[in-house]
Image (cartoon, rainbow, N blue to C red; front, side):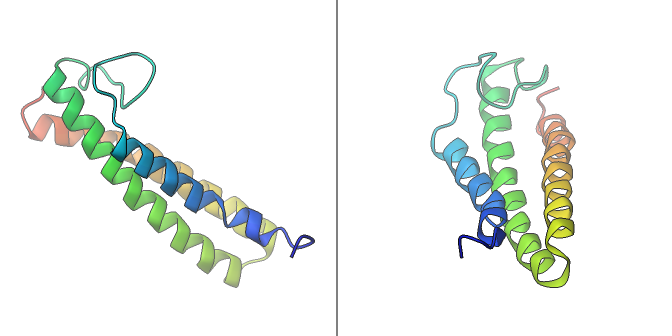
Length: 112
């Protein structure tokens, strides 16, 4: 098992899932410039801040779970190095997509 790095590759999604659950369990209490979902819209009020951090943490859980599934499929169907690249791209794109989705939800919920 130590000679096969597949297990190491398959830790990417679960590690992100742990981080996402960490953000859900311990969201930032106050608006700050260090920790949390920080955009101009989310930092306009404490209510917007709380909503954006809660929403983005939930979205991160979904993205991380999908990444875990994607990794298992990729590693079983693709050559190892290719599966690493595609999994990293999948996770990166999915995490970036969380931003505009959260921004839309902020606007939709009146945090303009």
